[in-house]
Amino acid sequence: MTRWIAAVAFSACLWPAARSAQTSPPKLVETRRSLTLAGLELTVTGALDGFALAVRAEPIAPGVARAVLTLTRATPAPPPRLTIRWSQPSVDMAGMWTPDASLGRTIVPDFASTRLRSTLTAAAPVLALYGRGEQNRLTVAVEEAVSPVLLAARLREEDVRVYGSVELFSERHAPLTRYTTSLRLDTRAIPVADALGDVAAWWSRQPGKVPVPAPPSAREPLDSTWYSYHQAVDEAAVLAEAEAAARRGFKVMIVDDGWQTGDTNRGYAHAGDWHPERLRRMRVVTDALHARGMKGMLWFSVPLVGDEAAVLPRFRGKILRRWAEQRTNVLDPRYPEVRAYLVDTYRRAVRDWGWDGLKLDFIDMFGSDETTVLDRADGRDIASVYEAVNRLMVDVMTALRAVRPDVMIEFRQPYSGPVIRTFGNMLRASDAPNESILNRQRIVDLRLLAGATPVHADPIVWHPDEPSDTAALQLLDTLFAVPQVSMRLDTLTPAHAAMLTHYLAYWRTNRAVLLDGRFRPEGLNAQYELVRAATADKQIVAAYADRLIALEAPSRAIDLVNATAAKRLVVEAMRDLGRYEARATDAEGREVSRTSIDLRRGAHVIAVPPAGIVALVRRPGAAHR
Image 1: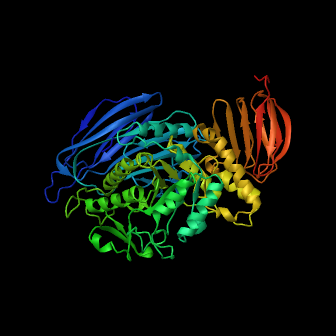
Image 2: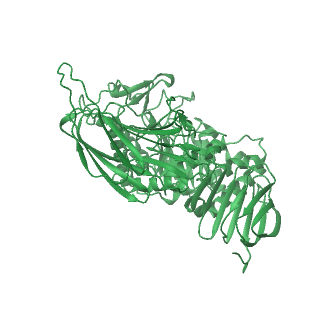
Image 3: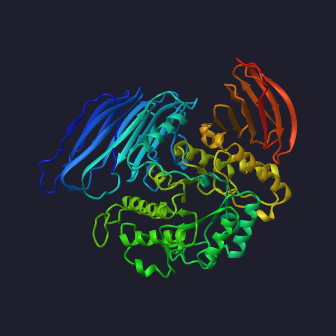
């Protein structure tokens, strides 16, 4: 399993369980210990009930440390609920970042119930407190990334301090005799984006969290059938869309929900058999994609077996819960026959049908609750639902990579934590149809913890009457992710086609900067109103609000992206950066101006159309200081 607790100088110790003298029934006594780590006073509490608790501190770097916690017991028993608490003065505390944007960025009052819940199938166990300059004040990350972890930080009015907590075993857990995990604290005054990037790197070095490599095709713009066709994906439609996608330069296409059923009610009552009703000639479809130089991916709703599925009787008694609104059921992955069925289903899609990758949806439906029996009995070979999902996905990836080593696997938020990166080599922002600002926020949230795993936009869709420059904002909001598009590509207007062609070409040309450059979002409390990426010789800065763009260092090339409705951008050179040629283009790629600019220290107003780009290229020999 995993490890936990937090930072700096304290020696190993052993805390035996305390027991009451009562015999009927025994009253559990809560153990409470305090320690100072990284300048913070931490308190660990829990009714150990026969467990011994050992804690070992490990400094990592100045301002960064972790503590390792180990629970042991002579005989198996459910582990005790353990809570670590700390507090710190609310000095320059502007917000709290978590992977779950629905929680907001506010540090809530201590009477609020807001907290982050992380499991293998939801979010990631980390939160960060930051100041108005978006500098890190405290980033807390837990090594446990399979079983539930609760994290919280709340403000107390009486003393204006922020009170934080991490809870382990907040939900019932199967009996065990040994458990180890750790908690990492980072108090460095660095950009919060850098602190979160270091957390992602820390996770990726741990056993069981090494990310699966991403094939080059996972970094290609992708055509999706979902918003454009929904479930109406018959063979003729898919082949026509593939032809149009190939002409537009797409290299990957996802065939989403609908291929497996003739039902068009947008529900999941017919999920689970996975026999193609609309795409009966799967090889015809995949061969057509391959003949056009494209790769294809196929959608599955992993845990769902609908009321109308022929296979449902086979899994009676192996269901976690019913999803009544959708007339479907959630399979229990703790049964080996459930896992075998799903593995065989996906292997067939890749091996026999010729698909190059899979979109594995609804992983977040897997989970336990108070009614779940947590033991190995009645055919279950794993007690924990979350550990069973981990085993399922290990088996899936082993089977698929044996057939196709470069298989593509897409997962979406909220199941995008460090263990998911060991299975998925494409992480997609969760559903945001025609809501590109939300799409941008979800993309950036993913990027901050994704490391080298490619992050994909939710598919872009716009109304046919949308002007090309406002439709272009859909693409610009997703500029720092791999673009996915879900328009009927053979029906685009000439203006929309020109815009899409222009921005996909721009994205491909600058992919190494956008995906691999140093990534720095700004405006955490405003859905990231400025985003930068930079390599050694190029910077790309996208402005999503009418705000000053500070340029601190010269580059051979600087692209300023105007993802606003304004007709100019305001730049402040923090020092003399030299003379640049400035070429401005509009949303369809037409050049609208070409001039020169001397980026001396101070403010500069640069004309650029809405949804346009001004490309600054330094003149040869231009001086800068």
